[in-house]
Length: 140
Figure 1 (tube, one colour):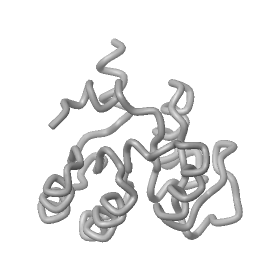
Figure 2: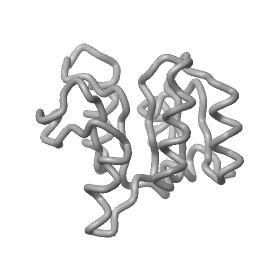
Figure 3: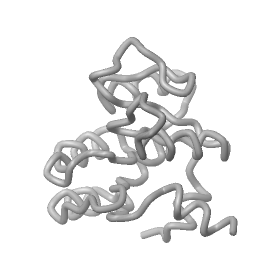
Figure 4: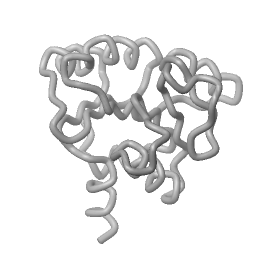
């Protein structure tokens, strides 16, 4: 298993599940920050399909986002989850299906069953950590 600094260094494309288009929401602030740091963000939120958030097309599902990236050989490195803990198991299965590198659960989000499932499939798993905070620590 890679450490958080290794995951951040090795990753380029981050699917943000539950990304809101409201600038006051944590998901928007994290996505905006990551984009400013050079990461490609992929918004995944069925409520906003057909829209753009931070200049990126919104996808209905992880599979749809992965399919859109596949033609140019890009894979989703991190699946960043802004969903309730009980909503994580299907996202873990989706992350496995698209061969993501890491299942990342934001602050206060933990689901051990989902984590075990993802780890067993070879994904790195981070629970109860903020991508933005962890990235800032590296560059402090």
